[in-house]
Image (cartoon, rainbow, N blue to C red; front, side, top):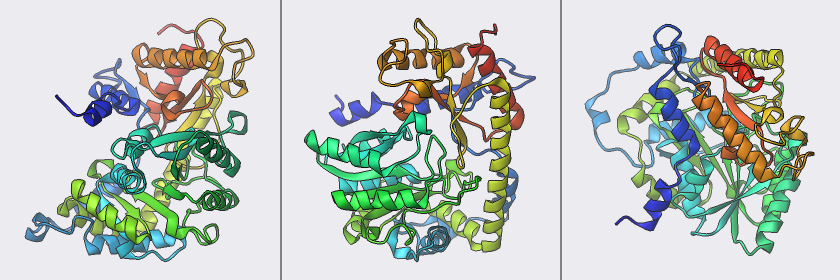
Length: 434
């Protein structure tokens, strides 16, 4: 017999993980495997290895010291380097002893949710939101996520009013709400939240006496006109910094997801002590910490690398946006991240399919199709694209989209792969045979 907790976790494997490993098992190759999968469902930046690879290779070889135990919440050297980097990003002085190094941003999210919530208590999250939040924030803590739906007609832009409504509604329903969790920049939409909106959101959190969990793992992946503002920036966070907890990691900005290193920053002494204790169960190897310490040692290299990363992201986004425009496939505007939020609502299969984009849908589409029917049609289209066209993108339901017909398409792979994937998607929705 296994525990109920394990049974619940194993029964709820995120669709993101399932689709990723299926697509990666048989990848497309124009010569060796032309019928292979095109994986545009995984948020990995594969455009930067030519920069980061040589930098890693130039670092000193492992020593006897790196084979030994280190503090399980992170070596002082790595925490100092991360504090220096993120102090500049957040435009706020962050101290090394306010950080916990842990196995990936997933580990950091798990630690902060477990520190804040007892089983059954709630975390409000603007929706659509990163699909693995359900597991990352709720899997071990037992917390329950409450979506705060954002308006499709407004491009799913964050508003403090939507979060306030969700907090009020959750408490009226009897929930004990402990926190609001926010991805900033947003995943999957790619919005860079305006400073005024962040300030209003923090005031909402303060008014409701809840903590803010800010997942800022895409902080340096901004390519649009609006610069990034951290939730810890004093210009927007004047009164709630002690109750704001920052999550960041090396997976996105440094294109190194396989090294599984994330950080949690908090100024709460109680939360910090809890997170340090929880890091015992998800430490980062001493050797890996040594690698990242060396990576961050050269500040000029880091600044140049991050700037080039933003430049390449901008080019990759222009490429996919141009392809989608060419094929007449709409999307929400994005200024950050590795994906586009693609609207295929006009092509959802089945009887009563809507005649316009999903962004026009209310509680029921104009032809009477319910939201449940719309999401069933969305899943069918997702499976057709995966099984028939061998293209992996992720359906909006995996991100708790308030409206059916939306998909996350990640574009940070080789440009010819993106071109072929978009061609296959357009051919499928417009009725061309495989």
